Length: 466
Image 1 (tube, one colour):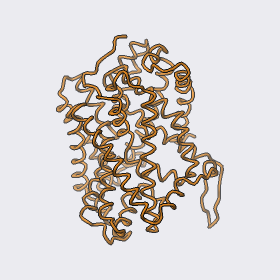
Image 2: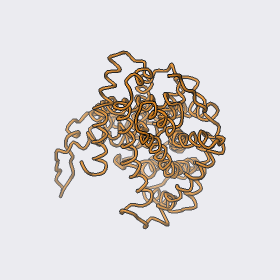
Image 3: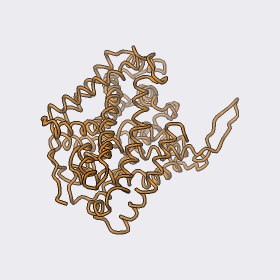
Image 4: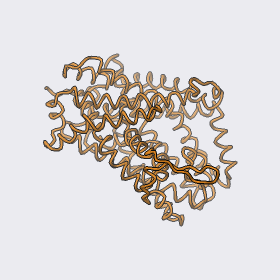
């Protein structure tokens, strides 16, 4: 087959692609969710299981998504339409592209609002507003932010403008330049924060919380009832590891596919996917090494989930030497992580408009950005004036989050695995991967049997059927 060329351009090197895809994978969840679920589900034991799940579930599907993108060299929608024709598959398989683009579109609409919180906290930390605050003061600050539709709207608008600006400038001048600066800056900020955490006097406690292996927690789920701890065999943490291994790599939302379409032909897909997965995990672990020593040094609760970022850590930064500076750096880190993800979420839809509606990138970015911003108003209002408006007992924000995370992304990943492993000709994928026979056979086995089975289990667990 004659190689296609993307009309949008190409990454200048494999390194830039790795930085871009890692930026897509690294997001707000890396900074609070992975460290938290690691500590609660067996520490080092959970990390081991998680890495196995990454290898057996995440990396094979990521390789497939990159491969499809590079072979199609178009937006996910047009790529899947073209490859379905070439491989003799039903044209309905182009729905994989539509599902991914829509999922990324919906995710960005609420992700932008949450990222706006991080922007707001950069301003608050920089102004020294955390200083001397107790739990009640921090809770009041957070509630005044989310309870004000005007404030949330302003920060949501600013973040969407930041994302649109980068995407509008194109692959070389926009996306590539952004990730070339954002990702090294993100790693530098993480290392600075880890260095700060090492001087809290509680660095060892933080490491123990993250890495002390407790294999019993992988099997048993425990809770305290009437002052007595009761444990049941559930295997829940294993499902948590499997689910997070899939979701953390930005699979099934079109971002990795469209980034793969800009990947140089000679770059190794397998090597790139493995490195992206390792970097994504490294960011999450470094975040935990930075956060938990600070939490323990201040006698705070490490199991606070999302509230750890916006309601627990500000107390710590407000009462620690250097907390003013490092609190500001921490929330800048959050903004960088969110920004690098958001540009990958908007890119698939923009690419499709450029290809199918003959729009300039600037005009396409404005249209997609504006539409996403409008849908995001539902999330803005979910925290205040629409907080009592519910469908299926969920707010607008909860409904979008559930629909994308529990239904659209797992189904997208499952269909990518089935198409790549069962419908695509072996000769086509072999040509794109250019791997040694044994390595290709391993991927072929995983993508046909192991990965689809695991995603089905994650899907059934997510919707409460398993």
